[in-house]
Image 1 (spheres, each protein chain N blue to C red):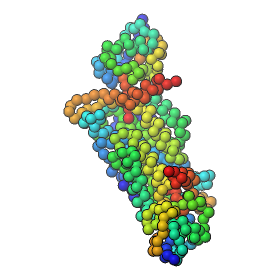
Image 2: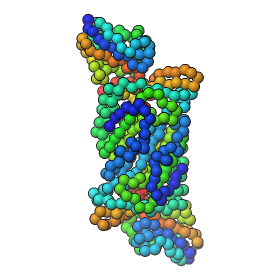
Image 3: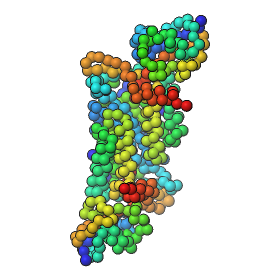
Image 4: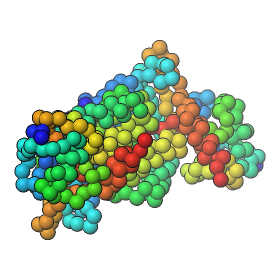
Length: 149
Length: 149
Length: 80
Length: 80
């Protein structure tokens, strides 16, 4: 269900494995490497992934999605290593009977994956600088989670 | 931006046209023909589309999505004619800087397309029967719209 | 009397047995056209579930109808 | 004293200059390990933005640490 890929993600091959004759709605989210972040020109980026726990936590997120928004099939793959502009960093897909569950489960998975998995992103900028991305939105969500009941 | 296809939709070709170096989030929704609807076994289905108005209204929906949830690129194609189980009936894709707009614009487009475009669906059942689908949820949304201010 | 072209779609076309007809009608609004052809499009669908277009533009049921107009009668849609 | 294996990731690893070290520590909880190695992982990140795992299981900062445990210190994550 959840995996880490060290090489290019191939959306079309993955999509074909999602087919289910009972599925009427199919929602995909892809995270792409974009050329700018917080005003800085990005050249490429690098994901560091601690695989044993990323996979365990990824599977947990997907089980939660299935419980909250029951669906037929789900798959998520996240890249590790060096990525160029336009590369697919993460691919999440949900097939379900109706579209509502497909959208909601897909959104739930990507939102949780961004804040819970031991994955770190280092941006390499056009000006030669580089830096670990401190996802402000993620940190604030994580904080809300830990502050919650 | 919005088109009607008389033959198979080819998601991978369409996806490649959505690339934008400023896009960090890409959301796709596909409607698939499923093998059952309201308890009846479906064999295939048929879309009747009144193209001039379906295209005009489709473009309008997409312009509304752009206004509400600004994004970089959007595309939607809807099938007409005869479709088999598993065929893609509609493909909606949105590329945007961040994922929130991508998800919301994609959802807005498919929700509106289902209730506003002059497109009709006839289901052919395994038992030989057939019938025009009277989308109850669509009718109820249409009613809310017309009853609104 | 106004000369009105009426086009039926999907369920309405099947029920009417024709996709288009030209009638001389005493009508003021799109609603009048719908009501007066109800037997031909033979549907019990509430009007709130149906739509209408006049001369290829989506319209309200209260839209004025002029001589020579084309009225498109749409049964409940189901895209996607 | 307990023998603790500490693993640093991403920013913490770069700042520490090592990815792993084994230390004899006087610690009760994961938080103690974090605090006592703060100079090595050299970060001003609020602890609420960081995470910890003990023996490859995600843990709370209050988790008890036993002799022989491996503590993984995670700086703010940014998947997706």
